[in-house]
Length: 135
Image (cartoon, rainbow, N blue to C red):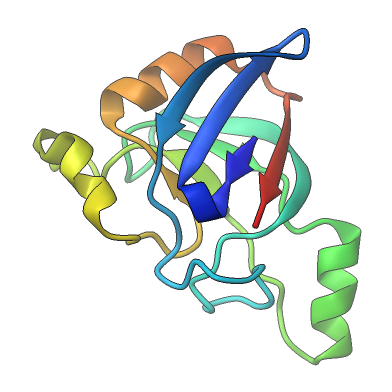
């Protein structure tokens, strides 16, 4: 679960919270993603549907955004909902920044962790895992 207002990602197993990370979000963190390029992190329930070890960022877990509902809402407004929303580490080559990356929301709509944190999350989060992103 990601709680955007708290900048927190929590992992649950069997209904019990087992780990929490502080995260950075899209550069416009208030409100749900509405369209491509709005720099917002989506809100809703999705799945981790694939992973990318060759990402421009240190490891990336892809979130199944946009849902059909997200796509329909954007289409009704005549815009693209966007895509490629990930949980990822820091841009490759900049991992030395570590936790300082959280001083400011900096992604294009993704959820960012330190490189060490995404490595841990990568190991314990199988494809198909549900992710809820709350305001």
